[in-house]
Every structure is written in structure tokens, then in C-alpha cells.
Amino acid sequence: MRYIVLSAIIFVLLSSGAAADKIRVGGTGYWSPYCYLSSDDPHDLKGFTVDFLKEVFSRSEDDLQLVALPWKRCLAMLENNELDLVLDGSKESPRLKNFIFSKEIYHLDNALFYLKSRFPNGPHIRTVADIDKFSLGGVFGFNYKMYPFDVSKIQQGAKDIETMLKMLEKQRFELAIGFEQIVCSRMRLQGIDGMDIAFVPMPGVESLHFYIFGNHTSKTEKLIKRINAGLLEMIVDGRLAKLKRKYGLQRAGK
Image (cartoon, rainbow, N blue to C red; front, side, top):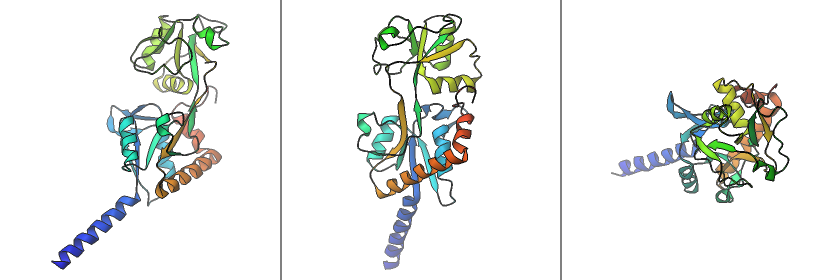
């Protein structure tokens, strides 16, 4: 009986040690091209941040476990120490104020997309107040309340970015609202002819900065240090630029 009990204790200790070596990471599956699920493999996370993390934790002893979860579930599991890290978080979110963050992984710039054939010299937008002079289009379900102008008239009939751009081309509205990096990436990756589409920065709205974050534990602090060191290495050796090109995140002409 003593041997059975001892064997059980050893099994638990070994299992606990193995679990401690796992790097448990949560990410949403709808933040393309940074973290998303594809129809051909609906259980495997893909994207820029996912590939970045795989580069950082590529040692033979690293046991990186990525799981696709709704955002609220990611945070709940992180708070319960069921995850070590979560991808693509912003310090601007009040709910994330108690977590620790990596260095900035990427940022998104708010932009207004328009047709060059309709506005050869670009729309005259110098201040936030100027935006209210134009009809606007967006994507259904996006939270536009963060913008400092009248969002009540935004047409949100588009189910995705591609549909929004088609509606723009059909002149259903004058300006489409979107993040520069995400919209331009979708255009490049989907092969959308953007010869007539251009954009101007959205005045009066700061960029959104995104990080990888986790709880204040010694394990997570070590993981964050590795992420920061890996980020610097990838900038210096060009791997980060290569990764951006893979997901169409480079600026036009670069």
C-alpha cells in the first residue's frame, strides 16, 4: 500500500513539474492578420503575433501551447493562472491595468479610406470636426464609440473589411473607417485592387499600441523578459521585417 501511495505522489510531482514547463498562451481567433483562425484549420491559431511568439520560444525545451479563446475567457483564465500569457492587449483597456506587459509588439493607426476618383486631392480633413461633414462606413459589430466625433451615422452594414471596401467603391458612403495596417494588410493578402483606394490619417485620434501580457508571477516575468529580448533580436537581424512582409504589414513601397 505504501508503494502505491508513494508512486501516486511521485506521479503528481512529475505531472506538476511538466505542467510548470508549459508556456500556456491564449489568443482570440478574430484579430486578423495578428491572431486568427482559418477555415482550413479552425483549431490552430495563425497570424503575425502567433508567429512572432513561435520565433521567441523556439528552443527544444520550450513547450508552447496556444489556444484560441474568446477575449473575456482569455482574461478569466489568465486571472485564474490557467494561462501564462495573452496576445494582443492594449494598456488603454481598464481591465488590463493590473497585468505586466512586454515591450510594444505593434501599433495600429486609425485612418479614413476614400476613392481617389471621388476625391482627387483627398478629402479636406484637418480636424476631428471635419469628419462630420462626410458620410461614413464601417464594419458591423465594431465598437466605434471610442472616436471623438458623431458615430451615430456610421453605416455598419458591412460584415467584414472586404465588404466595406466594396461598398466604398460603390459610393455607398464617402469615407470608410479602419485601422491602416489591418485594412491595407487585408487588401494585399486578399489581392484586392486598391488602385483607386487611398487613406488619410484620422486627426485627433492616437495610435493604439499592442503588447503581450500576463500576471505578476516569477514565471511570467521571465517569459516577458524573453519576449523583449527576442523582439530586439528580430528587429536587428531583420526577422521582424520579414514577418511583417509575410502578413502584408509593410507600408506601401517597402
